Amino acid sequence: TTETDTEDLRKRALASLTTARDRTTLLTSCVDGPDLTAQHSPLMSPLVWDLAHIGNQEELWLLRAVGGREAMRPEIDSLYDAFEHPRSERPSLPLLAPAEARRYAAEVRGRALDLLEAADFHGTGLTEAGFAFGMIAQHEQQHDETMLITHQLRKGPPVLTAPDPDPAPPFTGPAEVLVPGGPFTMGTSGEPWALDNERPAHPREVEPFWIDTVPVTNAAYQAFIEDGGYDTERWWAPEGWAHIRQHAVSAPLFWRRDGGQWLRRRFGVTEPVPPDEPVLHVCWYEADAYARWAGRRLPSETEWEKAARFDPATGRSRRYPWGDADPEPEHANLGQRHLGPAPAGSYPAGESPLGVRQLIGDVWEWTASDFLPYPGFRAFPYKEYSEVFFGPEYKVLRGGSFAVDPVACRGTFRNWDYPIRRQIFSGFRTARSEGF
Ligand code: AVJ
Ligand code: FE
Image (cartoon, rainbow, N blue to C red):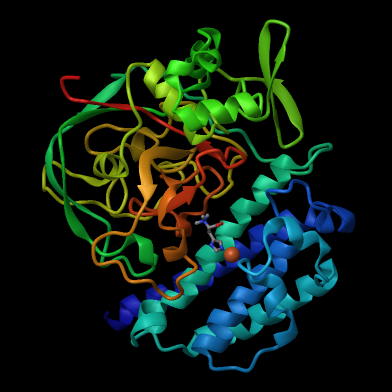
């Protein structure tokens, strides 16, 4: 890297850390103390746990690992270790109180910014291209998405507001796009802050396939419901069928039937389900069942990435569907600028070379694939980021949601969760093999 690149990355690290902290502050200051320490769902931590965990990870990786400093408060490390205490246990731990957690995170940040000013960006591993700083900014933003999920699960009047996305003219383009078969490059070796599971770049072959131009909408999903989709066993994977029977799942999470119409609750506001928005809060089993009902299937992770990154004119894989430039507001709905997805067909400037829209932002997209390492994977900097999750019990989601910051989202970024989870900002699009 040249000196200009280094100074550019240093500025970017500072900006990304600052953006993340502004978001964290907003999400933890719009509710009062009891709301910060309460557990709003057994799936989630108290907000005050996320806050101190953000500070603790920053202390571990920036102050201690990069800076060689002593632990500031060694006695709290185990409280904020996600592997020592599952979410359900966290409210009963002797956690730092809100004011103390805020002070701790701020003190860590002050020292981290001092370190950043003079940090070596030319080393290997954690210091290469400021990786640790980029990783910690992404980590905080990931928890900012987690905290937004907690806000969505919280009962009570709204405390968060944001402008709606611009209304879009109804999408009139083709329903699906043909992605050519053949090789493309999946993953990355050159993206400076890509996380371990996105690496390394490697060749993949796909057969030609068709993929939806836009994510599946509420209107389309309602047609599946009205057609008895939730009562028809043959659309469902056996474990999915057992799950929806046992838990009486019959619509996306936060939806409720009111007479003749569907209502949904979002951040404390109940309103009719908007037909042209991408469907949100569905689990993998629901996405998979819908796809079968529609005579289609979920795209594999490889197919998704080829649709998002492959440029047929050059044969290259891009950083994003629109090219190599960082996301701007006209490309994608990212960064919690809005508190929900934009209508299907929005962001024409963000479409891929093949014409696929909204691959980045709006809703995380379930893929057919299990979360597995790429050939040549090396756990870095810790096995608990990705490696311990590899295997068939997690499904991969791609593309990021409206709640994801640009620093934590790219064409190669991989997210994962259990196939029953739907409190996350998850939707999907469907695919079919050519000639099927
Ligand atoms: C990548 C979203 C699955 O929240 O469990 C946060 C991100 N890892 N702290 C998660 C993460 C450690 C992770 N996901
Ligand atoms: Fe974490």
